[in-house]
Amino acid sequence: MMLWPWIVGVGALAIACGGGRDEADPTPVPAPTPALAQVAGTLPPPSVTPSISVAQPTVAIPPTPAVADVVAVTRTEFDLVELSVPICNTSLRDGVLPGFGTVPVPTPTSTPTPVAPPTPRSVDAAQAEIEQYLATATNLLRTSLRYADVTNDVWQASRGLEDRAALIFVEGRRLAALCNSIALTEIPPEVTFANGAISEFLRERVAWSAASASSIRDLGISSTDSLEAQRDRTVALGDDATDSVAVLADAFNIELPLNPRIAAVESARARIAIVRPGDWYLVRLDSQIVFTGPIELQEDGLVGLGTGREGYGTAIRARRVRNAPDWDLEKMDAQIRPLFDHFGLLMDSSTETVDGHMASRHRILDEEREWRTDFVITVAGEYSFIFELDCPLKFIEDCSSSMDLVLAGATLSP
Image (cartoon, rainbow, N blue to C red; front, side, top):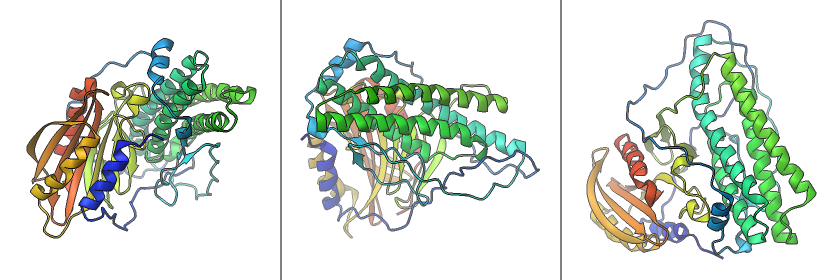
């Protein structure tokens, strides 16, 4: 079984930094409100975090790969024993996102929790929140549909078990990350129906991937009439989700598409507050903050999943670990440098500041995979704060711009 380089790196990093213990405080993430409100009343609009005017990377939407190209990409050494599909969590549980897990069987359906009817509010307050939701949701839906379309386009041409297993392995991780992002998105009550349609599409699509993975591993069969019918149903659900979003936008006279906005994100457990680049997706908010890059900055195939065990691919990660009592940046650098070998060859290092603290930046290149991993490390009090960028080399300019935005807006609380 292949061992993700990140698993080795995290283990050694935790030992080097005194165990890397997480704080016990729960992450204060507001749970979505699954109810539909009547837009009325005269409540004043809620306060909104001011926008940060920073230029965003401009990239072209990549075309759907040709069948031969995707099949060639997936024909990387692949062990069927590794075939698994992450759980699709489209809602929070007790205010937090459930932990990462993999299942070779269909994803269970969550039980809805009854809620009290929301308080009526003003049209202006609803409009602002709905626009913010649609800016994220429409982009997320477009991305998830493209991942599904790539698999559908290649599925019939990929007759071998290994080829189809690789397609499932890749798509399952891509969509599971977007499930997390939907769960962590603020859900105004007026968008319940549209958000439910997007969530249903994601859950059903991941359920199809999980069922197909189970069939391949247990029976040596990648397709059955039942599985094909389930895959066809996901196509219809994708169309329904697209229509639901359009109806929502029309109801509030919102013109699509909307440009995603830069947003502030804070983790109480990690004691880090940073900004999310507008077109990146928040996929983890607990002891770490993780953003995964837009589809324009993601590489196709297995190699595009990157070095992390979650398979987020192009990603920015921020976390905090506890130091030894007499720790400083020089000692931290000395301890962490041996771990760089797991990610490639150290190209160069430099110094900069993060929230007023001196930091070191290390750029690592995996020439064979054409992949860059950057670490930015700073020590503040009894803690080290570690920022990580994972990105295909051909997208590194845009990835680095997003990383600089995150670092410039970071607030650290030792």
